[in-house]
Image (cartoon, rainbow, N blue to C red; front, side, top):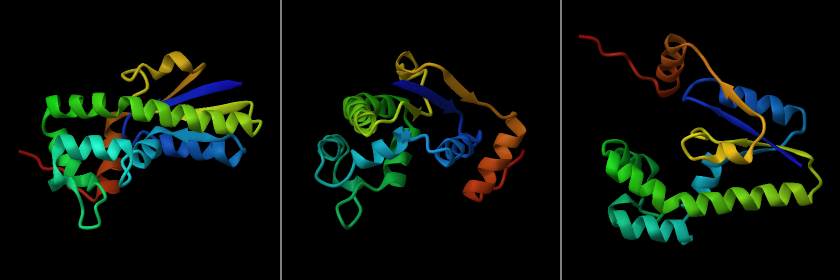
Length: 154
């Protein structure tokens, strides 16, 4: 079995490349989807995050409010690093199980889509690693379109 790494910055076109693999019946394990799954209400990841960040990060239905948690961790490097350390074992385990299920189904090539592959040291498990790159101007335009933002100048 070969595990191919797929990485790239925000709005670089990684989803487009990922969809090309899927269109050719090559499965993609998306680390972002795994991370969302481990934060579902009642899971081990959910319990750790609620214990660490409090009930204030929950929606009325008890699920983690992603944007609210994002505001907390993206405005504070220490809290972001703490969250990453807290969830890393759950994400790694979730990725492992997804790959195992695909391997058991007989897939010979699996793409592992991890946005921060090198930072998370996931690149050591993949060969080759495909890096999706786009020039900064195009990247900013795509991000602003995606999030419906305006660039503030001055």
